[in-house]
Image (cartoon, rainbow, N blue to C red; front, top):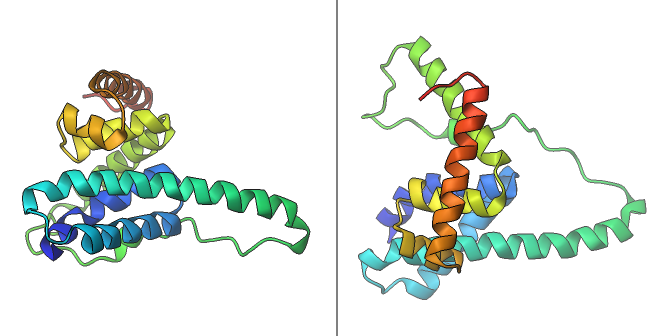
Length: 183
């Protein structure tokens, strides 16, 4: 179980970050999803874990938004008491993780910088997609689930997954091409 969770941790964080658009909330969502998986499905075969975790993660993201809606209602009503401190938006927790020995650490710094810029452009474009398109795209192409698995994780039909993925791919291509990134 710990090997599976270690392997899926970064992708799950990025997926939650794209959905919540808040680093702290994304970390909380991933942690909740991992805890639910280990508590409720620890005895399941390893082959079933990716599908289970994808569905649990999506449910945790939806739960986050439900809780956020309730909090926003109360925050609005009680806004006279002031606001909390602003968070540092430049902090990326993934940058604090040590690089693996088989990583591209010995690569040319100029190439690393170029790759970082491309990744940033792709992440910004992903963040601008509608939620369902982003969810379908990430499940299909990032999590590498097939159409049926993605449909089960999203709670919709396979046709909807295909439609959302197609629209996401076209939108991403247009956004990235507008920024000068050609395939």
